[in-house]
Length: 433
Ligand code: NDP
Image (cartoon, rainbow, N blue to C red; front, side, top):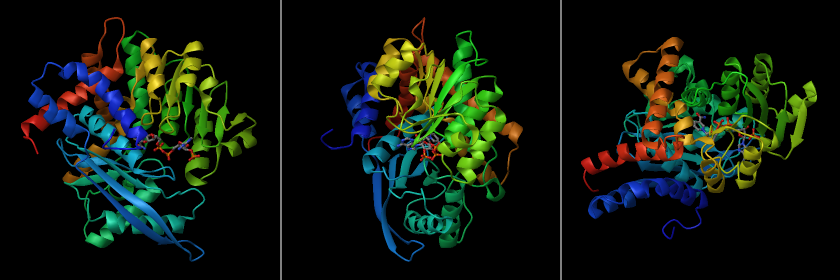
């Protein structure tokens, strides 16, 4: 903590990880243990740069851009770019740290990184977003490459932004290379990448329930977020017979006790992705319940899927969910549950699927986008669905292998230990550097 002052999210991520890993490495030779643990929490390198762009009124605006290249033991750095006013180095370090282990769980040859900017895309015109992305990539291009570092999207960075970023990269380097994932399918993107994180989280939940002789059919699900992860999780849950009763954005949440059907989800996708509108507008147009400035965790549910952002589900929310009989929590977002909440879920033996396992479907399909780009091939939807399902299954198996406690599976312990072992073994093989 002294070496990384004022970086609460990063401290929390490391603490959550080390709590489960420490007992495992206690018997290791001291030399090996120190050589791995100390190096694991220090990023390989960090870039920070000025991003200067002109808004529609001709005013010059300045933001700060970052790329954290955390660990490349298993392969090129891989992890998303986030554009949100809350972005700072501590948040990106926590996300990059998590990414190292999430990527390890996919079994693909990927290291971990994360980047982004405190730029706020909300309320910006398309042209402003384009000019920002071009300026951001002008600097970032020096540090990335298909065998070096391959960024993707995250909060505030979807297909539109990836298109502008990729366009600028091509213009600067004069070559078409697999340097970003999440590209449009028309110019090198993979089928199913957009859906992969949300779908993957639901596939994980389904496997988790099935192992305990239960299923998704008829389950009442409370979701937060109304972005890429939440909306595709909602779509998949609905198609499997579950009842999605809430969605949220940063202004509040909608509550639809009968569940959102396919048509409702499609119209919310149109509202959020195309019109870039707010859930409040959906509530006004349809008459469904709307709760301003609140998160959905007070709604009674069987399963909770926090899919918005870090720290959105705290100890109080966890107590409410448990009191209302919630059976399981599946993290679609990265570390949405606070340490206190995670502790409560684990102590109460509530099934808790941590983000590094449950939301790894997105990066897994990104890894397969890189494979397809290298082969100059595109795989079809059927193949991609099979690949995603197989990877989520493998991640679940690894969690069970390391986290099985007899009457219950500790998925936090399972995901941390399985990924730690893969990264640590490789680090030791590559020598101390
Ligand atoms: P989007 O930008 O598509 O959507 C984010 C959603 O969360 C929006 O509805 C947004 O509301 C809401 N939100 C964002 N910040 C806050 C906040 N501070 N308080 C309340 N609501 C907030 O992002 P994604 O869906 O891509 O990402 C969501 C989460 O999933 C993040 O934690 C991300 O790191 C994680 N993730 C994403 C992956 C991906 O493939 N996209 C892969 C793995 C993890 P509003 O519209 O009002 O801003």
